[in-house]
Length: 477
Image 1 (cartoon, one colour):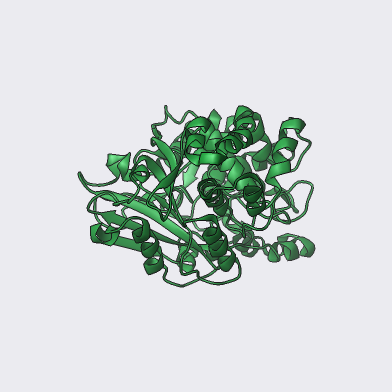
Image 2: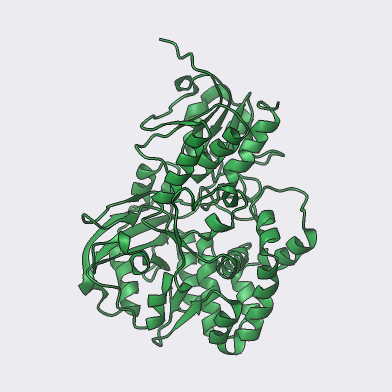
């Protein structure tokens, strides 16, 4: 029986970008249908009881500075939709081997006071960025275009387009500031001696002072559920448990937007796209994957540095040279003995995550793309190094290697949670060099995933810009 329902637009995939695209199109009065292959919406913003009953873990993303900073998400009435943002007393703690920890606090001054001789350099670096953060983030979270704030952007770019290692060594002489900035740069999933890894240090530090590094009460799933509810309130419809394998699986529509990366997109489009574009998508580069681990805990992590108990996020990697070496090893296809570990401890600030008196923790490290290596022991060794007795408080654990992450979410090709390398060659040109990176050659086809500018993160801007592109062409009034 032929499908006869007609929509103005269809969105395939319900990650933050797919939901953002669907919302923006529905706001303009269009009939929009969204399809999701899994039983729940969310993509990288899902939560589940992965270890023991009553322990809620964030399956993928956990801490959300970009959700608060995103120009598009700032138009979403999250609070009215039931999302409660929790701001820990400190955004980040970075423990060191001397038993202390450097803390990324809400204010620039409070952070700088703990950096010794580097305090003034930190204020000089971060002060101008934080002062112009709203204009700057609107430039950063977008495609290549004529800047609206060229002076602000150029000031940022002079620093951001450097390697993190070069920026940090040029600005700071002390171990504490160097470790703090190197840990933030490691979110790039690139070698820290390559540009533009400095951009990640600057942006994440700026956002910590401007909007904080919050978590959603009850789990990141609350963000996806709120976006889905908002979309439905605008007249949109969602169908879950619906795998799309070809365009023939979709009802007629004037525009189709895919919240997929090139690896998943190619089989769906097949010969519908020009051979030259297909070859470009086949050459799209994915970066390192991650090994993810969640713990159910009998009590909080016993950090040697008490400051760590005030932070929602903890970076575990010691001094800058160790972090640089670990990330460089991963990029070279190796599994470091001392990986850089990103850890979140949501239950310290959100009691709904665990039974009374119990706790959760969430962590991952970077590994070569497609890795099946079990990094559990190496990650737990790193935590134990700065929290002696950590293993004694573990009740249960759940792990996913890079290959298993792709099975869970095919957009994480080889475990790459960024949707593709975000280096200078593939930042604004993702997924292929085109004036309009969101438009797929062929009538009414668009890409709205993190494989388009501005790339990975829970911000929805890839979906927003793809929707704008569709509105300007197939859906123009």
